Image (cartoon, rainbow, N blue to C red):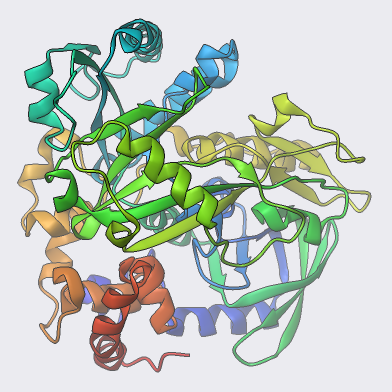
Amino acid sequence: MTRILGRTPHPSALSARRRSRELEVLGDDPHVDVVVIGGGITGAGLALDAASRGLRTVLVEAHDLAFGTSRWSSKLVHGGLRYLASGQVGIAYESAYERQLLMTRIAPHLTRPLAQVMPLHDPGALARGAYVGAGYALGDGLRRVVRTPGRVLAAPGALSPSSVAALAPAVRREGLRGGVHGWDGQLFDDARLVVAVARTAAGYGASVLTRVRAVSATGDRVVVRDELTGDELELHAGAVVNATGVWAGQVDPHVHLRPSRGTHLVVETARLGWSDVSLTAPLPGSSSRFVFTVPAPHGRTYIGLTDVPAGEEVPDVPRATDAEIDQLLGVINGVLASPLSRDDVVATFAGLRPLLTGPEGEETSDLSRKHAIVESESGMLSVVGGKLTTYRRMAEDGIDEVVRRRGFGPMSRTRDLPLVGAWPRARLGEIAGPARYVRRYGAEAPYVSRLPSGPGAAREVTAQELHWGVAVEGALTIDDLLDRRTRLGLVAEDREASMDAAASAFERAGVTPT
């Protein structure tokens, strides 16, 4: 354990002590190659791409890793089927290719194949099933083109009524004529992916600094403020990259965004018969949008996804509206034997997607579905748009632009660079440790399991998991630990039941929560 938590910590470990030390070093030598503003998946990806090329890299985040949109996704690694259906072949290919990298090389331990089941209940649904089945077949063809193995994502097909009922026990049997079966990738948790990417960047020498706000920024200078002490520091950089998502326009006025809100409901998985598949129901009046369920940690299931204009105000934590809750319940109840009620919803969450527009607010639909790099008059770069699945490509393109400006520099290495904890999917069973830990930490599971025991939290989250979140994953506050390292804060009852255990974890790690 000394290599991870002892006096010579592993270079990928994030901690309060490391944060303080790196701020001191930057105070003595504030000249760096790249400053990344924003600690979501895009910012973490940029930091990893830059640091792994050998560039002296600093990431600053005003709050915590995965504080914003990156923790409010559907937790899926999409293959681009929706884009393929609308004729956007290039974006679909990019999504399928990046999914393949995540599931086979970059993070096999944090991803898994997820079965999708769309039940068919009436004669009209059979035609819809044929349409969706054809889409799945096209998506499967794209899977083959990018060489995702069939043992990772199987081919789609039709389902008999009995097979639908076996896979999704909560489905209404009356009028059930069969179903359509497809596959996509699922993340164990989006915030865990962000932390893993950030830690991998730290392992390559990046300074990953949470609770450090960018007060002002240009193309070669950033004034940052330590939110814990109030101290300010001016960093001088070869390049400054804005990766603040829906807040990008606040950092660089040249970026024009129109956020849309995606809302999910949280219900007990038991309420859906403990189904481990994604149950899919078409949105009335649309041939390409669906409401679906996603199995989630802690015995919960998420139901999403809305896509509505969010308005000009960008809150730190978006909220679901009553109308969105009712819409999601109404659509998914159309395929359930026992409809869900408001009482079944134990929590909701909503995220804002940064859709790029023109200077006058006009829609640029192509760019809103693909990432873009916007340059300000000062030379600052903003990487905006895109989605979680393609974060690595977004980061590669952003740092390619940084290198192009320098006139020289190494190529990106991240296509073949595994994240901390990565282990071949077929050999995950070799890892010594509880299956729960292997799903969360991969090859690091043995180190987590050897930590001292102590008071556990809700939903069987152990003292070891909490300790690891503080000592290795950089949690500075109880909110960091419950909301993003373990996701227990999503449900108020779980949060309340876990407060004492979280405080105890900080005490055992020798850290005072801020």
